[in-house]
Length: 75
Image (tube, rainbow, N blue to C red; front, side):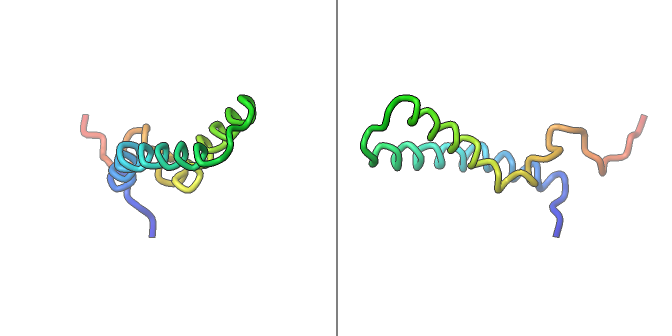
């Protein structure tokens, strides 16, 4: 079942405003539990985690910044 444009837009806001801060806190907590790696390895871990969080939500974010394709142009 495909989500409508409005539903994808709403879910993207929820993910960005609620999910992303929770993910950041979880990622920092998990990395802090590990012994301190070198600065470059730690940077690589954070960059990888910064990319990985968005992959499951790719279909939700796709096209959200564009105009609503279902809206009729009443000019």
